[in-house]
Amino acid sequence: MPKKQKKRRKKASDNVFDLFTQFQVAQFKEGFQLMDRDKDGKLGPDDLDWTHKHVNLPTTDEKIGIMLADSPTAINFTMLLSMFAEKASGEQDDDDVIIKGFKTFANAEGKIDAPALRVALTCFADKFTKEEADDALEMFQVKDGFLDHALIVKLLTGPAGDDDEEAKEEEE
Image (cartoon, rainbow, N blue to C red):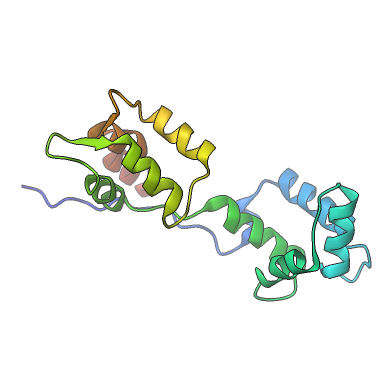
């Protein structure tokens, strides 16, 4: 039997500007310039406080401090772009991690108890909101209180054979 080939992910560029279109970068730049009220080239507490008030979002000094602490350095335009890219991208688990994760919930017939999965989704690790859990369970097609493990895996990892197509694309 041939050795199973691990799915290769496309490597993200080290240059954050390559992750967005020119139009998107221009939009982010315009937003940054609007938020940078003191025009010092970085976003500070006063800039964020003004921005929140300007768009009618309630905030506190504590929340602003938490936002600023999300950045390892002062938030200049490049750092802001990096933060957006990080938040937008999320990390992807390899298919085998997804398969094993859902397999832990499956019974001998390959069925997953929907209420038990809802509790896990909303109470542990990166917690889902009630709405996110509802959306996920709807997508996973609950039948008689159970989900089909194989269907969930297919929805989250794609149909079998995608590995070969991705490998061919990367070789070209």
